[in-house]
Length: 376
Image 1 (cartoon, rainbow, N blue to C red):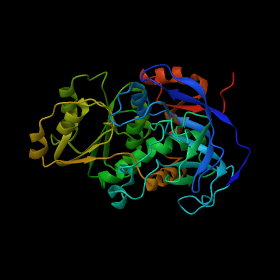
Image 2 (tube, rainbow, N blue to C red; image 1 turned 60 degrees about the vertical axis):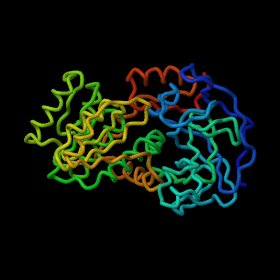
Image 3 (cartoon, rainbow, N blue to C red; image 1 turned 90 degrees about the vertical axis):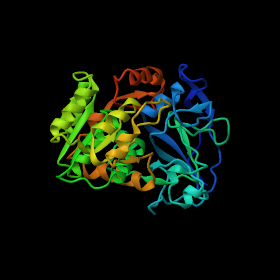
Image 4 (cartoon, rainbow, N blue to C red; image 1 turned 45 degrees about the horizontal axis):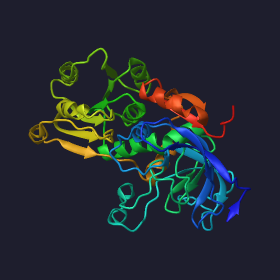
């Protein structure tokens, strides 16, 4: 193991009971790193809607309490386990390098064998795994975190700032995966994006850059729709101005000669959006579902899917290739897409409770916690 001087303990934002105020606790730092593992200091951790659902206890994915929240982070290496001196793309790693890393997968289950690591049956997810077992530090809202041997890792290019790199490790890589799964879009296609949160805005930008003839973003509040326009939306539909789903459907049909959109992409996270999106899609169209990770349910008419010959595509998370593409996009599209417009604030870790409240009330799009700035 190669390492700098390691701290004995670190501060972390811990969830012990769902919905209760987050507290900063001192957590022991492992003094050894297993072969293939890494120890990092967290330089930035952006908040994701999934973090809010996880803290509330409404996430439709098992979580183990108590846990250190946060899964969208970038870290600087302070210890390197044996055999971990190159990243997953073959680039050398050394003390001081910044990295992103994937959830840890087993590499042996049926899903890993099918090259679907995001569906690994034995996955250990950062920000959702209990801290009651070694190595304890498996969340991004902490001063330090442990990178398990089963996690892919990538060196962050020098030109990508910390806050955008952290966003790439969940929001952008998830959108990259979704856009890839959606298939080709071109000038003959109308794309409707449901949702104007970080994922919806990023998807708006990537569909526009992919050459979609028309991108229509549906969401709220209007300030976020303004950003969606900056990312390339040709039209926006405000939920505030048009609260009736029938009105929104009529607007989509008016914009598409009565047919509906060739591709509808759901990034809103609201269960009711599913039935609405199915109606917005054109016959023989595609419906991409990305945002539904909560435990909510909704009612749909499944015959609509059949009668439209609709292709419904579920997209979950992203694998190492999508992290790598996300970093490349941040480098190459920096002069095309205003990524920094999504970053709504930088905060010390001690402010996590108030920042979480601001996320719940939609006052933040993508706040970034800076765990190394915890002292008053």
